[in-house]
Each structure stands twice: as C-alpha cells, then as structure tokens.
Length: 109
Length: 113
Image (cartoon, rainbow over all chains, first blue to last red; front, top):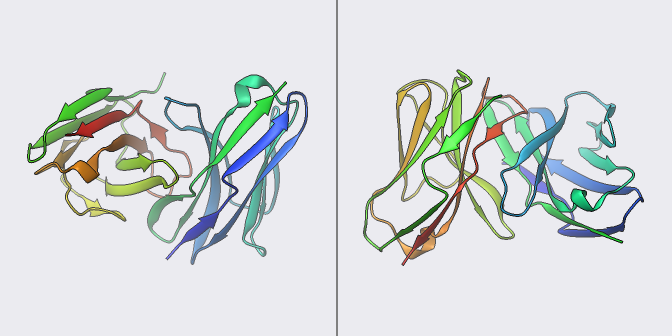
C-alpha cells in the first residue's frame, strides 16, 4: 500500500518563509504532487516533481528526494491569501494519486 | 479555461434514498475520479474511470457505484444512502491515470439525514 505523512497544522507570519514536509511510503513511485485548497473551495494543482531537486514557480517551490522518500513545499513571502490546506499526493505503478491528509497553513499578521 | 462541473453544491437526502451525483468535464480527458473528503482524512478515492464504460474501484468503493456512458460525464451513485455517507464529494479529471495534475470540480456537500 501507500502512505503519506505531513504535519496537520503549520502557522507562519506574513512575509516569512514556510516549509511543509511530506514523507511517503510506496512501491513503484512515479512522482509527488502538491495541491492547495482554500476553505470551501476545490483543490488546485500547484506542482509535480518526478525527479530529484527543486522546482520553482513564483513564490512556491517544491523539492523531491527519491532516495529519502521525502519532499517539501516551500512558500516564500507569505501572504494572508496563502492560508489554506496543502496536500501532497503520490502516484505509483498504475494507480491514481493517493493524497496525504493535508496540512492546514495559517498565516498571521 | 478548463472546467469540471458538478450538478449540485449542496444536497440533503434521507437515509435509504438513491442519490445521483453528476460530474461533467470539458477537457476531453480520458480519466475521471470520484473522491470523498472528510475532516482529518484527506481525499479518499472511491472510484475512477479511464475510459467510457470502464471503471475501477478505489480505496473506499463500498456503498457506491459509478456510471460512465459518455467521455465527458462521470456519475457517482449511492444506491441506498446512509448517514455515514454524509461528506464532501469531489470529482476530478486528468489526461492520463498517472498524471500528477488533476482538475477538480467545486464539490458537492451531501448530507444524509
């Protein structure tokens, strides 16, 4: 089976940097995705890492280490609108995405 | 602009009723998915479909069935709704089954009384 671990809650200050970690256990790993979900909204895709290293998209970056079965989402220059839940998800073999339980990020002034 | 729509944002049904949740995507995607989301449990896959008339069970298929008669439409059916099926239901689609990017609909919050 597959399992993912991520912190349930994180709080950070506006303008700061926050890192949300995700560790996974799976066989036949293909890649790690990150999604953002605001309260009452649908999950929206942020990034996908299939290879080791850092991928940057504006204020958001995502990192993957396949050998450590670990990845993280890095949010820089935090804004109040970044307050949301963030989910990591993995796909492997011929199975669709399996999602973690989500990390609720609260950005405070 | 890509779009996944779901037939209802909120739905209230009674125990034992048959419930249909409809999902339509306009991206010509082969793959469609139904998830339920509960606090603290994340998104759990109920069923998915990789082609018209094809379906595969996800992690929690018990009590649910699906129908995919047309490529753009994927329906979730609760044959006899129960209170433990009260949840947020999310539909998604993707280009391939292994795609890391899925496009989600706005969700249907179902309450079973």
